Image (cartoon, rainbow, N blue to C red; front, side):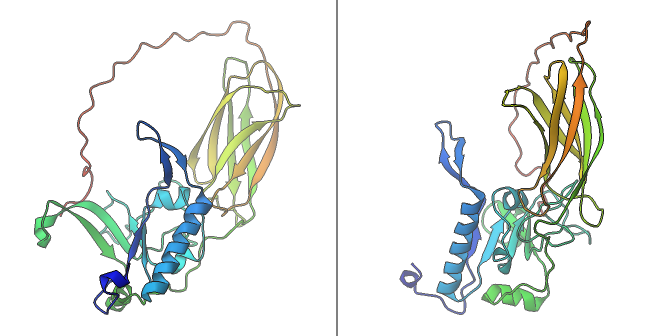
Length: 304
């Protein structure tokens, strides 16, 4: 393909791989019914980037967005050898401390996340709604981007000689400790409530991962529902509902698909009693959904 286009010369810019979708099969209503595994997406991206680099003798650029990097791909040090073009909109890029890929609680952990929980991006696409005419570009909308670095680094990116600096990335499989703050179990008509915290080796809270409750039974299938809400770094509030009266043993298990923090669990025992006079909540009145209005895809984005 490169040869058919006349090959590569000094005026050509490096290629960029735009990877934002891991769906491999769609249903009749165009919803995704099968996703590629994290391992497959990661290996495919590495293979593509390496092939392009070898064929062009230039370092290609990797474009994506924070949630995809964390949820659809594995962390891999080889990926961090390529410059990251990170898309995140509706964030003012001009204050000194502004940055893409920042969560309100915790952080996005992926191949370009450093030990300070920040993304090592080379280009930040902060808007897809720039006014094209202001930049002499035909059309209405225009993507707006910031480059991170000095003029020399920009030239290295443009001519494909870019290489990463010395960066300390997030650890792999670091040890953790877990603490059960409380567990409250009363009667069968009320939820079991619990709070769990997970810590890193230095005592600071973990920055990613999730908590799930598991019942320990002798093969008996016991139906229940649960929800776990992360309310602060390394802290979850858990609600367990639907258990009948009885004594239970279980475990709260912490896991982390990014493999930053090691798995850990804490055992619990609790008893639920029968409430002889349970309060039956009235059925809620059906809500009438308002008619949907056409969405504004540029809402909250910068347009200058």
